[in-house]
Amino acid sequence: MCMRERLSICCFLLFCFLLQGQTSVVTGIDFIGNKKTKTSALLKVIHTNVGSEFNEAEVAQDKKRLIRLPAIADAQYKIEKHEGGYNIFFTIVENFTLIPGANVYTTDEDEFAFRVSLFEFNLLGKNITTGGWYQRDVFDSFGASFRAPFLFSTKLGLSFNYSNLTTQEPVFLNNGTAEYKYNNTSYELLGLYQFNFFNRVEVGANYFNEDYLYLNGATDSNVPTDFNVDKLLYKFIYEYNNLTYNFQYVSGFKSLLNFQYVKSTEGVLPSFIIGWNDFFYYRRVNRKGNWASRLRMGLATNDDSPFAPFAVDNNINVRGVGNTIDRGTGVIVLNTEYRHTLYEKDWFILQSNAFIDAGSWRNPKGDFSDFSDPDNFRIYPGLGLRFIHKKIFNATFRIDYGYGVSKDATNGFVFGIGQYF
Image (cartoon, rainbow, N blue to C red; front, side):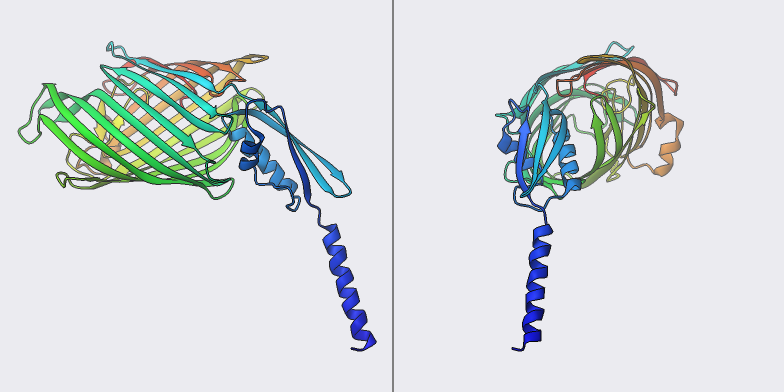
């Protein structure tokens, strides 16, 4: 090997050594202020690791990941550079996470229903959500759930849900309306996977039993008065989330797709498909305002069935409309509201709310022109108040009053925990 070749190799090795020396690494990650949440659980959430190449943009994303956790009210970070690399310090403000919940809704037709719940959103300090609920809506219902999004790794988790839901449901027949006692007992298992900061999926199955029992009202020879069937539901959920949270204020865009395939395990009923997408858009308005909107668009297999899957309901999509007043095989609903902070001091926030809920449905075996039919259209403007605790997760007590201005309109109050959307 000649002298020139040796010199070239030495220069190349020196260049590689210098280049490696310029690569800064993360030498330490510390969390400050996490009294209940385990440090090991927080390390599972963030994507920056000790020994990895330092990337401040990734650290900023990790801050947002932490704030998205039910256990965390706020998070800030500080970076200290030293000769060996970078130390990162996250300062955490924790939420109180053992949360009771309540939803109450009424209309001017004297309907009254409620749901109460108790959930722990940070079980064992590991960002696991578990709890149960009880509902009284003519009949008694109850359920329980377990959700651990980081059970296996930073990206992979698991969810299990059980419910025994019993309600009195109107069934809309050609010659009038019948009232049925409806029971749905279900067991659901989902796998949870996060691709990156913005995208995640849930995939799994739900085994459930549906039982309809005629109570009163109209009858039809083609519609049974007693109906019981086991079904299997395959579920796929995809979420794109680019929301930024600052206590009661939210900004950004989120899209949530829910797609389901349902079939009868006994072959009694035909299989059907149902899917809907919720689009959320939030925008800060000056210093104390927040504009929030949700658009839901959905379709299902267009069977001529009185048990159509999309419902018009007080506590789901149109405030003040009543308890399951109509059903359809397609849905378009827009909820838009302006939230304004009236008072804020220490942990307490009083927020006002002005909203418009509007929606339309496709009739069973109908066509897309049904969406423009005045008989299917609902418009409910209204006003509300929010009482918010800044240091308790989802501690927003809401009161809304919706007043219908469309055909055959009602009006009524909707009470609940958490923002309506």
